[in-house]
Image 1 (cartoon, rainbow, N blue to C red):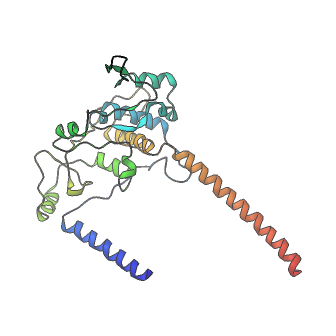
Image 2 (cartoon, one colour):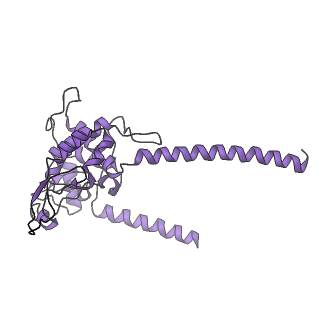
Image 3 (tube, one colour):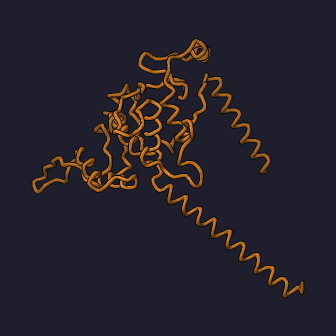
Amino acid sequence: MKKTLYTFAALAMFAVAGTAHAAGNTIEQPAPPAGGWQHDGIFGTFDKVAAQRGLQVYREVCATCHGLKFVSFRTLSDLGFSEAEIKAIAKEYTFMAEPDDEGEVLERTGLPFDYFPSPYANEKAAAAMNNGAAPPDLSLMTKARVGGPDYLYSLLTAYRDPTEADLAALAAANIELGDTTYFNPIMGGNQLAMAPPLDDGLVEYAEGQPEATLEQMAHDVTVFLTWAAEPKMEERKEMGRNVMAFLVIFCGIMFFAYRRIAKRILGH
């Protein structure tokens, strides 16, 4: 029975792969930036300075179209922002207050317990302003896509003009680039409705920070969005290390206890 299930799973995988190939899906494999990610591995931690720059990129570029509805302002303290800085960031946003005694709803400035708002009133408004497709919320983006941060970084840095080979592959698959889409080999169908969001120097980093190249901004905003998707990652890793250390010590104690008991019972 188990062998049959394995065989069925393998055939299903080949079928999916064949369908993707037949559809002309020439998706490139997402790749991390040079040097990889500081948060990778069991001992990896978030680069909080990079994440702070990534927040700046999100607010100045990405927030025009994408929300961050699962991230509250006060959680930015995990990235090293002070209480005063968090309050200042929150005050730059407006929210609808609770109805007053007369039932009138007024606007108020943001508070630390608020969450980053969507740039649109609702999903239909978002779709209407973006050629019928509402821009996705970015709160869980690096968890929702295969490849995680590698996918997002590659997507942001992979925009380019298609080569003749690219066009030939698309033509062979009966795929035509739309007038309002942009070539991006990381995407299925190799095109994306979102225009290239980043360009060298688009954001001005503070003095003493790295130059705001396209690659650097893509790296920084990916670090920030990876933290946004899993803000307790460092705590989870620390707990995992502690549990593993406990198990190793426990196994050692049990082994020596077993040896001692066996020696008494067996006499050797």
